[in-house]
Length: 402
Image 1 (cartoon, rainbow, N blue to C red):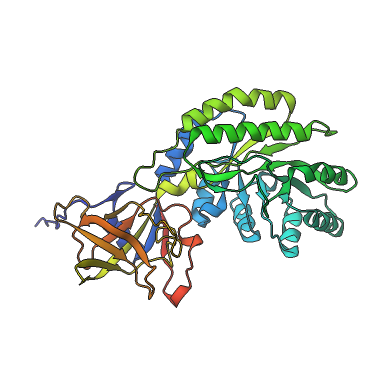
Image 2: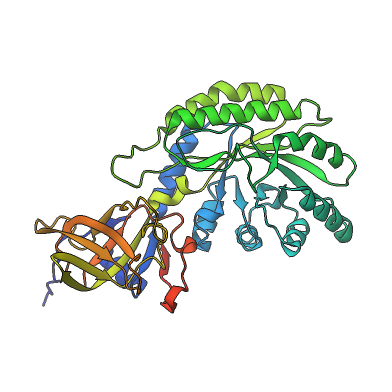
């Protein structure tokens, strides 16, 4: 006798998997899911636009899930890390140490020891770091590979986070670099390259184009007197993704077309030097979702609150980063009933005992019931790892690469 399976109305599909099936696979909520096909598509599209000479690195801080790192290890040319633990993840993924760059203003002695011993490129951001790296090379009997991170002398607008052009803990000021280069000549270290990082989360192609051109000008100016060519120059990234209503996706084609204009000059002036584009959020941010379950709903003074088992302890960015002044909602849907015509205006809140724990304010959604799935889109970058997971001691979320 044949059996008839219960037919459920279609829910949100994530890499062709229904969100309810994802929840069964995760075993519980909340969870993050990352779509490997979306990551593939983004990398392939970018590769088709970039000049062939431009290497592509993944910045692990955007999403350090080991499965994501191992997946990307077969698709990018290297990794950029910001801690010794991220360095270990990159090495475990099988990437050559010379394809790993370690940046950050606060590297500890132990961090630097591990980096020098591993043979990765240490991005020097102060004369103190240079002295430590030199001493560790002597102690370990190896020649460290160092990269000078430059705090650029220009500043660009329309960047979500500016990381240069003013006093900063990141990198060395431009006017400090010549003296450091002279000091390098007296030390037994190998100068591998320069790193210029001007900002991140930029959706304006013209801004990125101008920042890259100024970065190239800066690098050519600083390398004019070098006795030997650099192995590579890391031009940072800055590519953003849209999160909020009214934001327009970055025109990556325009940015890459401009690279075809200025890259020949760089290659001609610095023969044998490889340019690197360092991206994190742009590769994985739109490939992820955060899913939590409705556990209660209530009305308070004519306002409807949908209460979930998730919140800012897992997804601080979607919750407004502990009370940012101008809070805006990430894209959010009811995953098991995304097209339901019965709709309401509500506030979607988390389970924490703080009024800051809000996933969405005054948003129109299908009427949510207990047991429904709330899905926060654009959650592939700076989600779980950038959140206060131990705040109020709730369980950590599951993570899956689908």
